[in-house]
Amino acid sequence: MTDYMILINEEGEIETIDYDEITPVAKPKARAISTLSDSRISYGVVYLNSKAHDGKAYLTFDNVSNPGYDGYVTGSYGKDAAYIGTYNGKVRAMQSGVVMEFDARDVSIVDYSKADISHYYINDGYLYHKYFYGKSSSSAQRVGYELDYMSEGKKYYSYDGHYFYTDYKTMIDDYQDGNRNHAINSQNPYYNYFQFLSHRSKTSITASQFDNITKANSESTSKMRGLGNSYISHQNTYGVNALLMYGVSANESGWGESSIAMKKNNLFGHGAVDSNPYYGANGYETPADSIKYHAEVFISNGYLDAEDWRYNGAHLGDKSSGVNVRYASDPYWGEKAASVYYYNDSGLDDYGKYTIGIIEGVQKGYKLYQSPSTSKVVHTIGSGKSPRTYNLPVIILGEVKDTKGKIWYKIQNDTALNASRTDLDYDKRYDFSRDYLYIPSDNVRIVKGTTQKTYLPGDVNGDDKVSSLDYIQIKNHIMKTKVLTGNSLTRADVNKDGKVSSLDYIKIKNHIMGTNKLF
Image (cartoon, rainbow, N blue to C red; front, side, top):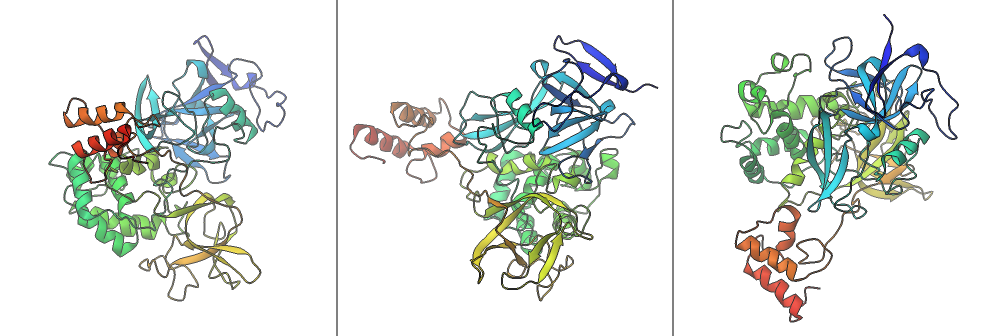
C-alpha cells in the first residue's frame, strides 16, 4: 500500500500526495528544516487525528526539542499545531512547547488562512487560551492575569505558551529559524505561575476556602465536596501542594461529577488510560483515599522521584516538561489544572508567593550540590537512571556567594533526601527544611512576577483612569442592573473591605471631585 500525505490547499480542496513526490528544496537562510517541493502550503496548520493510523488511542511523536524522549498526544484535546515543515517523510510541528515529528498518516496539513487556530486573548483583566477540537468545536480557558504587553480585542498566537505573536506567519518564521526574535515579548517569556510552580510548595488557601470553592463550582452530589481538610493534611504529610492537587482533581473529575469519580471515588483519573478509561481506572473506598494515593504514590514517590522514568520536573507543566509529559495525552492538561486558581482568586493570595527559576535548555549531566562550599554532588539530572529534563523550573529559596564570588541558588529539591542530605531517598517523607540543594546561577532565568498589568485604585473598567464611568459601574453593581465579575469586581472594592458597597462609590466620587484623592 502506498503511503500518502493529506493536504488541504489554499482553495480548501483536499489533495493526496505520495511520499515519493515530496522532496526537500534548498532551505532558506538560517532555516533548520526542509519544506515541500511546491507551494501548496507556505504557512500551514497541522491537524492532529484523535487516534493513530494503527488504531492506538493516541498519537506518538518524536521529540525534536529533547531527542530520545518521545511522547504522546491526541487531537481530541488540542487539534491544531504549528506546521514547521516535512522532514525525512515526517511532519514537524510545534505544540505545547515541543517541536514534534509525526507519522504523516496521523495528521493533515491545512493552509493557515483556512484553519481554526488556537490563540490567546485578553478579557476583563485575564489571559485566556482558546483551544480548537475540530469541526469548529472550541473552548477557552483562563490561564493567567492580563499582561502589560497585551490588550483586549487582539489575538495572540503561541504554541509554547511563553512567547506570543500577533501575526501567525511571523511566528512560523521564527519557529523555522529556531528562535523567538520577533515575538512581542522576545526578551520576557511568560510562565503561567501555577502551571510552572513545583508541587514542593505549600498553599496558603485554607480547608474551608477549598470547600467554599468546591461548593460554588459543583452540584451537591459532587465527590469533591467537604474534602478541604484532606487536601491540606496530605499536603502537610507528603510535601505536595494542596492547590495543585485540587486543580488536577477538579480538571480530571469535572468537579467530582464524572462517572469515574462518582462510581469509583477516583478524583484524579488514576489508571484511566485512553484506550480503556473507565474500566482501567483505579477504585477507592472513599474520595479522600484517592487524594492520599495521589499525594503519596503518584506524585511524591512517583512523578517527583528524579530516578523514575516519568520524572520531568515537579510542576504541572506541558508536553515539554512537568507531570503533563507522562500523565495525560491532553497537551494542555497542566494549563487546565492550573487555571482553577484564576477562576476562584477572589480573596486568595497564593500568586507569586514563590520565586521560580527556569534552568534553560536540556539538563543532561546537570549537577545538584549539597552546598556551595563543597564539591559534593548529591544528584545528577540526565545521568544513569535519571531522565533528562528540558527548561526545568525550580523554586529558589535564596541566593549565596561562595568564597570566589560565584553566585549559587538554594533550591527546593524535587525528591526527598536522606538524613545527611548526601543522596536521594524517594521513599522518605518529604521535609521542606531538609530537602534543599544548590545550583550555580548560570543559565537560570528568574520568572517570578512575570509582568502583570496593574491598575489605578478605582479603575473599575480598566481604561487606565478613574472617571464617572467607574462609579457608574459600581452603582449598577449595587443596584444589580449589571453585576461585576472577575478583576472588575476586585478593582471595585476600593476600600479593600472585601465587598463592593456605597462606600466604594463615595470614594471614587470624592476622588473625581478632588475632595479626597485616591492617588
